[in-house]
Length: 319
Image: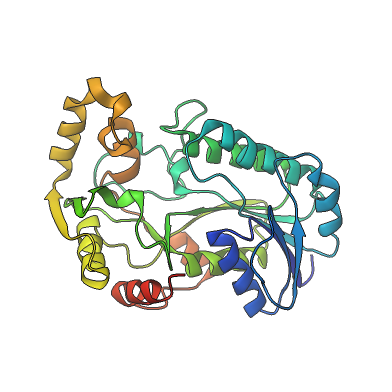
């Protein structure tokens, strides 16, 4: 395949999608932006295609839109745990896209670090691209299960494939994340044990996705997309408090105490927040290491500024 000059981006109206369209245009690439509903004005060089990927009727429109494109970045997906929405907006949408996709076309899938079976790990362990994934039926929630199934669908296609697995994606309008801990009004409960918060700023994710679209994976390649600065949850909560004035109060809780509390509350688990249920707690905030060595060695890049600067910039740029 020659030089990449035009790419198709699904989910282009979403948080990651909008940033990815902007990054592709900044590199001079032509973009076909697939949106479910009328979206933002992307500017010159962007062809907007309105299509509901969960509906098989979208396949002819996708096939036409793909003409002239050399790569696809698939960012469309349901972000929550609603099983019905996952089945439609993640799995059926991916199946319909794959049906329209020519065999040799490069595919960049926006997956997630949620696919890793952290339940097999111990506090302090390192998560890399070789860490075992959850097997079918063992994922702790519908979102993680959908990302596993989505990866399996794309692998079965057997075309050139990047499996890009972002961490906790953040940026303007979205500086907080469920991986940070539990909040109740102005009070936040933060993990104080060692362990990195696997942040992924949306602009860094966009750069990695477009770089992947412009690079040959030589088969199937997985990369964890995570920032260089991966603070502890305690440091992030304090930094956010300093920049944004929220949370008003941060209470520290060591990992051992948090896990013991979740275990004691097991009989009440169905009615509790996810971070007070042992499987989800272990999957989302167990203290682990999240190096981005493979990402940097493969695609380059780096954080654009220190964490507090990026937080401040993101707060000021919030819509």
